[in-house]
Length: 275
Image 1 (cartoon, rainbow, N blue to C red):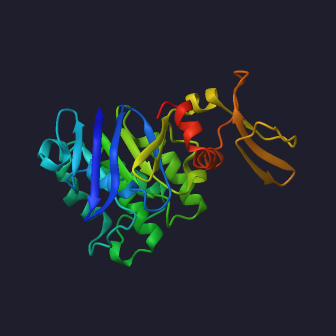
Image 2: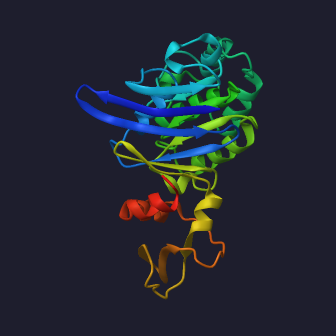
C-alpha cells in the first residue's frame, strides 16, 4: 500500500504540492488527472524516488522511495512521457535490463511486442516514436512489478495502439499491482482507470472510485435541461449534464464531464467527496 501524508514539494520558491494526503490500495488502476502544472509528473517522480519530498512523507510497504533501496526499486517502474531511443535492439535491451527485475518475463515481452505489432529485433533508435513508446510499455509490463507509474502513456500512440494499450494493461498486469496513470487523454483510458484522482494546485480535489462518483452524481445524456445541472455540454443530438444523484439511479460516468464539473464547482465537489 502507498501512504502519502502531508506531502509537499517546491521548485525553489514555487510550491507545487502542499499537504497532499491519500492512500493507494493494491490491485487498482488509478487515473491521475489535473490541469497542466498542478504537479502530476512531480507526484509520480516523488512516488518512484527520483525526487525527495520537501515536506511530509511517502510510505510504500514500509519503505521510503527516496531511500532508493534495491528491494523497492525492483518492485516499481516509472515510465515518463518521453522515452529514450536506446542504441540497441529491443530484444537485447529487454534481456539486459530485465535482470534488475526478479519477475521479468522475456516471453511476455516478446508476446506484447507481437501484439503491439513491433519487431523486437529492431533497433530502438531506428523506431518511430509510436513504436518506441510501445517497446517501453512492453518492457514495463514484462517486468511484472508491484507498482507502475505511467506519465501520459498514450501520447504518441495512434488509435489502434491505444486500444492495444488498454488491452495490454488489463490483460498483463498482475492482480496485486497498483498502477498510477497520469493523463490528459481521459477518453483513451476511462474504461480501465478506477479510482480517479484529480489534483488541483496544491490540493487533491477528488480521490474516488467510479462507483462512488456514480452514486453521488448523475450523468444525463438526454436533451432536456435539468435546472440543477452542475455542468452542461451540448453534443450532437442532445447534451451531457452532470447533477447531484438524488434518486440513487446508476449512470455511466463520463470522466471528461466529471473533470469539468469538479473544476467548475470545487467546493461543492470537495464537500460531496469529503476532500
